[in-house]
Length: 165
Image (cartoon, rainbow, N blue to C red; front, top):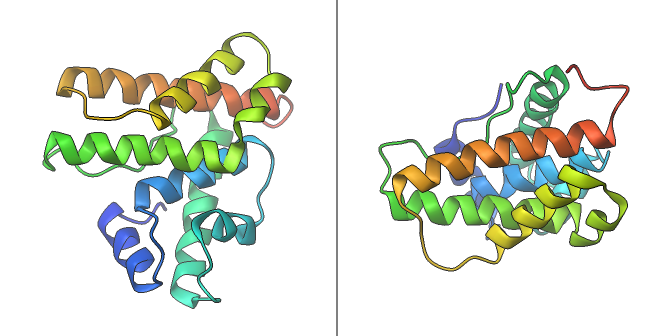
């Protein structure tokens, strides 16, 4: 089960890491899309936590649950973002941070190894990662949906025999 957003935020803060829960989930997704399931790699992307047990457990649970969602396919994958009752500006910043975590883990160079829609999806995720400002609620919802589909596509391109769809 994916840890709740607020719980993961608190764990990251207690570990002294500057990453948000959204950024951590983006990093997990980026690494899974390139086939890296090493929890230490995720912690390396997020920063040095000096073996924080609670953080290691939370990241492991996040990785396991996210991997299961991506493996299942059928668009069951969900981005870990603040709840709908959080102000739109804060949710927009979290979405940008999610994309930054994804790109930091997956790497922009990966686009050269991809084809068609998958390469375009990665380029679009990188563009959101570079974004400044916020988006409106309707644009936000559409962007989240686009990213969900794009990440699932990237995962399936990298794991054609493993994916469930």
